[in-house]
Length: 92
Image (tube, rainbow, N blue to C red; front, top):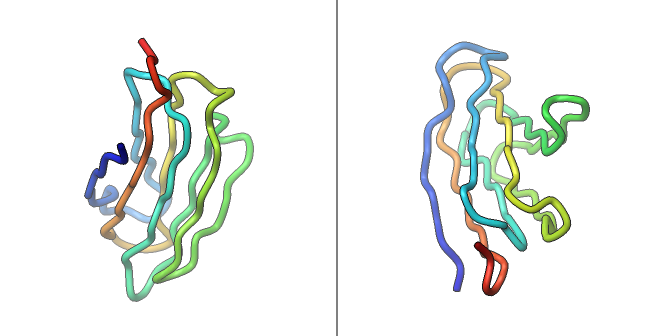
């Protein structure tokens, strides 16, 4: 069953917001709810960043990552983000 988080990124452009999961995640959807700024997400501790334009989402399968750490940063000021995720069945 999907779970949902609604968060706001930190207020300074480029400042990183960290999302840590305590259980293995199967899949994730990150929606940028900003009307002005792009959102950037990293699934590998900042080595690579995915740009998520205003009003769009990014979907990824994370089953092989176990308990992921996701980094988010804004192009401008703080912005609303919706995260929908599914845990791995029977994950510890």
